[in-house]
Length: 134
Image 1 (tube, rainbow, N blue to C red):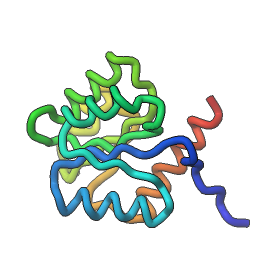
Image 2: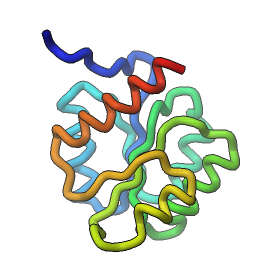
Image 3: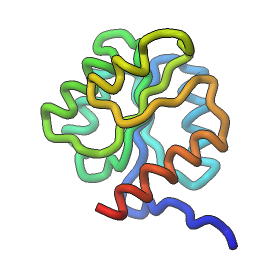
């Protein structure tokens, strides 16, 4: 029996990634699985987008190291503003304390870059199942 695909009829994933190549690849991988995605380049743009589109953002993939407002600061601000959807940290630093710092900032999970299509889909599926149970 085929796995049930996450439901996105009323929303989208917000991708927060400053690197053009990473952003293009990750957004394309998500869209290949019919997961609507909106891509912004920094934490300031993420805060603005979530403020204007709070109901349609179902989850966030958040790069940690970005200009203007980094992923940690953006997550703290989103949580302070009442955003309670899943925020997934993304980093290429496997041996840093990013995992601990991201959890302390309010992120729900962690994924290593570069990410595969399967890793992205499994992360989306995991968190959308939890959201449906709420």
